[in-house]
Image (cartoon, rainbow, N blue to C red; front, side, top):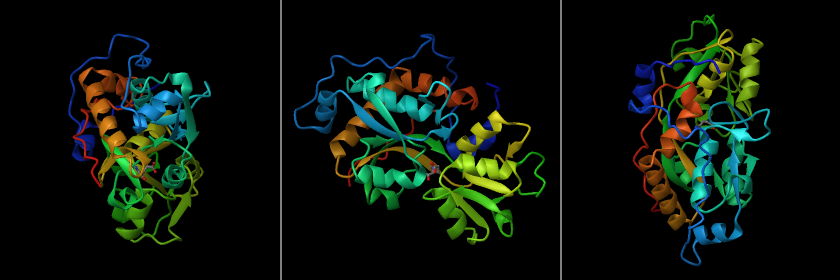
Length: 295
Ligand code: GLU
């Protein structure tokens, strides 16, 4: 994969990324080994999942670096690796994780309907979503940015410039809501699809002038087609990525936060990043402070 070195200054502005001077891990294959000793108090969600020996995870299937189904037929990316780390600590092997595509607008419904046990899908934690689902994390801090055609023919340099142009984003996403409520884009100015690849294709075809979502999602599209697209590199929101679980599972949420902290301590969090998003985004983040699981 070609490596696009995102400006660490631009990224750090919104992502609070810390330069982690660690090299890549040396265990080569990095498969999260299921914890065969895992044991949990009866009646907890962790015990239920460990006992079932399988877990269903909602993730993205078309977002390079975080969740993308490639030729292998299996989704790959940082979100996928985070899900594998959590499953492994429950004693669940990779092959017993069922990954289900959860497009942005399906994330809360899938959790509410019990269609998935958790969602790891570039999922911003916020108060509105917190009313209907619970979030562990954050495990990563992204920021909303803008993708334009190579050479930036429309001269877009900031979100205010989107007014009067054609912008694409995804239904049920925070970036779509933000450009409508904060930057006043009308339905005529904003095209909404269910996935970001449809927006990417609309930009490539000249049907829209810009695509807006999280910088790290857009960075994956630039990396795949650097002759077609460019990223402004000036993030203007904070998008803390959380692990969505059904509402009322506070104990599971606390346990996921402990698991993430252990993964940060033993290097598996950094290794998960470096083998996925880290191939394009040069700064390995430190695990952000957990938000806390109460209420
Ligand atoms: N992080 C944002 C969100 O959760 C945008 C990315 C996405 O739609 O997955 O809405």
